Image (cartoon, rainbow, N blue to C red; front, top):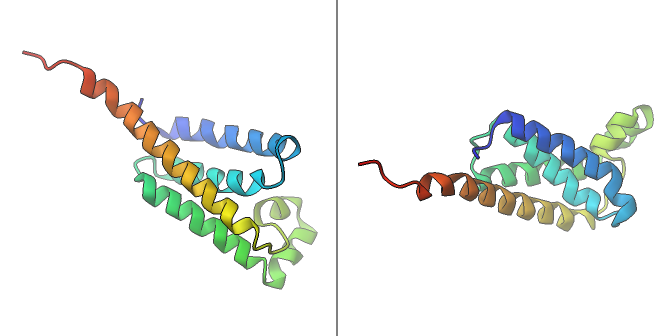
Length: 130
């Protein structure tokens, strides 16, 4: 089952849905993990053939960049004026979020690697035509 933009779009929708429910069910830390997973799915939506390490690294880099951008007054200002900006960019820097983003990137890498392996297995299992 190769990764396609359609499957990536479903993953985006699923990640957003879980993200809206999970913090109340599991804990606030899930937001950081899910944020990075969402970015990973967006990378795959834009470029489905991206290698697992690259997709996870891009998602982690963007997650950390957004978190560090909260050190400037601009994120808080945008968050005051827009609910969407508050959800996407946050408003307050918290160093404790950084490891959760890294965990999200690790989960993304493992899922992507597993997904690629699962997609390759049927082709490898087919007998050669004589």
